[in-house]
Length: 308
Ligand SMILES: Nc1ncnc2c1ncn2[C@@H]1O[C@H](COP(=O)(O)OP(=O)(O)OP(=O)(O)O)[C@@H](O)[C@H]1O
Figure: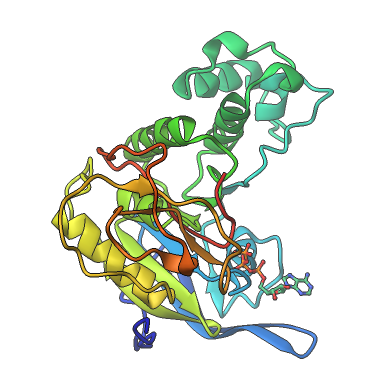
């Protein structure tokens, strides 16, 4: 059986001693009769990178939307910086505006083309300033969405599964890009993801949302770039356990092998496993794309959203 989720008393304010970038106290969100977030507490320090995991429907996006100001919340319960930006799973570029105009959408500054160009250069899209969104690849479009977030100089960057629709290689490149942007600009980050390995690769702290509360907190002390060594694997197993995915004890160091996606149980899916290990979701592992992963790369333990 998966380990039961042990509620934590309250997510600890992180390393920084300054005032929190995000402070949530006793926040409850209901849709009709359904309580999605229940008396929730959360602190995110300035410059801290937090990942939020949880089963499908656990309320991750609801929390992110609240922090983004897209859903109203009482100021005494939810406090965030004024400068916020959100990147969603879909890049949400307006097809009738050139890339640079999408990046500066809503900005008042008269220097907007210059700002857009600088931000696009930072995400490696300096050559696509005048392109139309329809001519961008999925990864390029998502980089343009990141540039649009960057020009707002956010103190809080909210990422709602921004890499979920990208292929594995592009996703790895995006991980590196996001980390380098985060290092350069140091916003507080909340990353909602279904991918346990992505969370471990990127975050300082990982939270698991369950039953309307932040039920688990794991600090990630591994140095970046994060290799898929024993500590990484142990944390991965613990997190998957918290999420209800049974994990076999490690028996060897054989390379990971691909397990074809199955109908998710409780919205959870783990895509990679060792060939000799009993597979999750009742599947037996078989060799497919194979290959290990390094430098914070993804072993592909995914929740809910499935493989992409
Ligand atoms: N505007 C809404 N009206 C009614 N119910 C809603 C609304 N928004 C979200 N919900 C419900 O709240 C619950 C949490 O939704 P939310 O999208 O926050 O979950 P999630 O953890 O992000 O899910 P997923 O991982 O599948 O994206 C779900 O049961 C959803 O149906």
